[in-house]
Image (cartoon, rainbow, N blue to C red):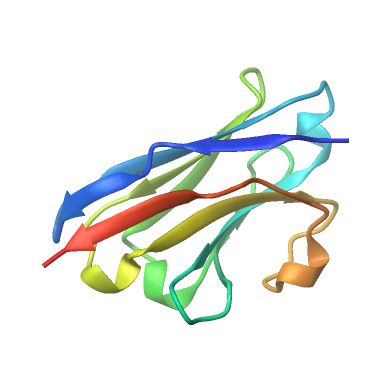
Length: 122
């Protein structure tokens, strides 16, 4: 069992930056690939980025490439999402997820956090 707790969300102006963190419980953090998803009001949850177990591979949704960076620190059981050049359309609840394989759909992930709100004002 893995418990995930996100933090770092908030209100930021367009063009600004935020860094989200997701802290995982347990001693098996490095056994899981990690990902970030987001869900805007009235929309389905969508893939943002994923990172492999030891961080050697990363994958991004096209609209986030060049602006968002996913990273992890296995010694701290934490995964991060650095978000730069934020746009109003990035406003959403951001969720972290843990799973055995990296997939872009929500169905492939085993554990989810409660989410953190990111609001980007224009």
